[in-house]
Length: 423
Ligand code: SF4
Image (cartoon, rainbow, N blue to C red; front, side):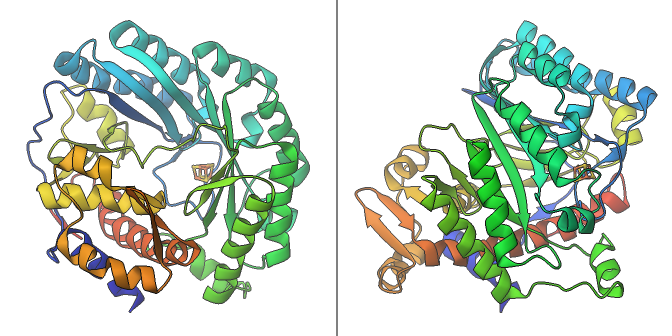
């Protein structure tokens, strides 16, 4: 049943059950986008954590220098198309972007010279990089939001995740980042780590709150077939939290964050009332730059090659997406609704403004039932997911992430230029 959730949800949001087909194809981008959201992937890390499903590589000076040139080359392609357009947000994710602050600084300088750059400039920072000099360099480059990848304040859980620092270092890193003058500091935590108890997660949230995080993000640990982490834990007879423990942990995170005055801004994030949200994938459209980056723009969802050498080689000749799926109006509407569910609020006025229509029939017909079951509530033009609704969506989002990463990312990690992937 769990595995059917994404299909059922897709049917409800778009009235379709057909799959997404990703193939190599020409992608036509809109000529004059009104505001561009950029995501720039910097894949280098000191070491590779066994639980991490992202596109990453161990840092190497020569490769990182070549990579810096490659991302500017890719950006030049967009300048040719959209030169001087306004860029509303830039997020650097990874990998460990804070390991290469010089790439961030030079890329932002280039963007300032070639586009109208304003708004959110966010960077993921590893606790080991949160030194005064790196933080100053990020501030001087114009970075105004930081997401600090703490994952846990518990030494045993950090060890289980293969992280290369301890809880004291994590706390000191938080203090330095929070004192460095960024508009938003997000502290990233992971829950449902093998061996973790509900009390430990409550302690983690308590530390992040006491340190003064503007935003708390708590993501469930997920396992993917292309990473042997789960098997490794099972061989080591690690105590794996079941679905009930995971549910209790999410409940505790919600309760602890709300008791501390944070508002829930998505199924997995909580913000101080005045804090601007650090968020990348929830934008209506975005352009991904770098190895393995994805782009949602106009009629296409596309991904760059996941091979670092191929990415560097291909950008020299004019990079084409490795795979792209063409989206029709119903797909785009479903995509938008999916992320609004993730944000826990669907503004039907905004829906009308963007798509010229109301909710699609299947979901509209179910609203009274969902309301009766306590999954949603309506206030004015906005439909909100209740705590039960948020839990249901937590399950759906996990299944989607699984399907998307296992099939699309799994195929792209196996082959630099896959022929076809169906999700
Ligand atoms: S979790 Fe972060 S530091 Fe670890 S391998 Fe993944 S991207 Fe690199």
